[in-house]
Amino acid sequence: MAVSLNAGFGLCGTAYGERPPPINPGLLPAGDPAAPPDKTERGSGVNGLCFRTQASSEVAVPTSQRSLDLERAWEFSRGAGQLVAVIDTGVQPHPRLPDLWAAGDYVAAGGDGTEDCDVHGTVVAGIIAATKVEGQGFAGVAPEARILTIRQTSSLYQAEGAGQNKSPEDFPDGYGKVSSLASAIRRAADMGARVINISLVACNPSSPAAEVAFGALGAAVRYAAVEKDVVIVSSAGNADNNCKSGNPSPDPLKPAQSLWDTVRTYVNPAWYDEYVLSVGSVDSNGAPSSFTVPGPWVGIAAPGEGITSLDARTTGISDGKYDNQGKYMPYSGTSFAAPYVSGVAALVRSRFPELSSKQVIERLQATAHAPAEGWNPYIGYGAVDPIAALTNEVPDELPPKESSPARSQQLAVPAAAPPPDNTARNVALIGTGAIALILTLGLLASFPIRRKFGMSEDDI
Image (cartoon, rainbow, N blue to C red; front, side, top):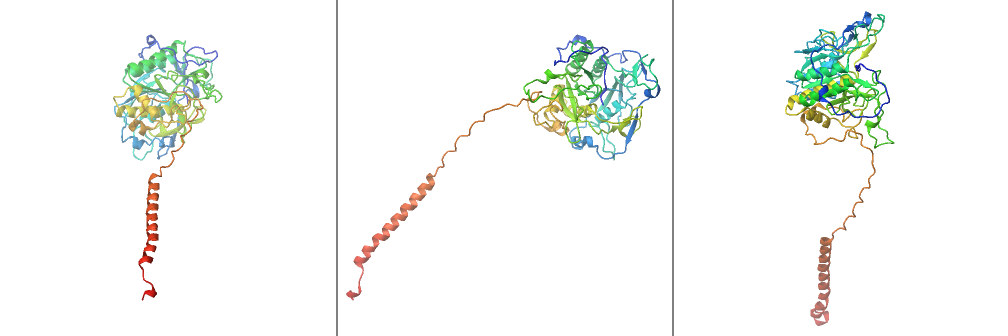
């Protein structure tokens, strides 16, 4: 699942590769008030009702997180002392999310971020920090971390008046703006979050560099990462209706071509890869998920298929939801890969409090299960490894964040092996031969002497 954001303007033009421009700190938005930029309303009729969930009775460790070996990772850190902001569709209060910090609502006036009609944000928060309970395999990656919730988007809300010409059967437009995302990031950083999880994206078919809203977003991520030392983790986006054009894979016929030159879908906030760790998805076997939008900004990967997490409608757990047309949707997408990485970031920050946000990101990437080429645009530096991130020494430098082109190289011809040194053998053989010769000559010389001094029968 991916959550789409609207920048509030039309987007058109031919795509061309472009890195983020220099950030203007003067565009940094205020974090207050935490209120929607427009008057909003919930959709009417059945399509305005909150989504239902599919409860799960699974007691084993979910397939999606078996590879993480969290029980062993918890021997080194459980995320104590870490505040993780979830900027999403809201987080519903749940007994396995104690001390949930309600930090504001940019969707509904007067809200505090603890309504989650879409279910999405509660699933994300559970993956990060759900406490461990006896007899239940599922638990959050950092069960001693705390969650700060800010609702910033919802598919069940829309701008006020947008439903006037719709029937009760029509879906709401959805609500969430890039400008309010920038404000939410600023707010989370100012409230002391050490990690910010953003499991939503804005996909644009042309460079957003000139748009004011994206300038504010760039200023916000820089402010959080540099001024407030926050680890920002974002989903890479799904190749669905929101990011359907995707991006091409590396061209084997043009191995030296930069992937920035082939971008046709800009994924934000992942585009600001100097400050944001973007997460692709892998399946239970560690293979890249087909829905991940590849890009030169992708930094790491985590499980994003077959997800189980907290149930936004009960006190239990859930593995899917139903939309208001009764369609079942299992939890799947880069949206759910990102919180696994956010959870590991909380573990690392708790164990190594002296590390800066940049150093934490580098540690996560350096200790990931790397692909053969070192980096690729689907899974970045590889699948996150909590135990390695908490225990390994890391190299000073990572491979370049581009696919390395193949190159030919003449290998040196190995030098001929030196002839064997048989001196000792030869000396031994010569000495043995000399002794044998002397003995033989001595034996032969003894025959005339014996004949000279010997007696015959005629002498008797």
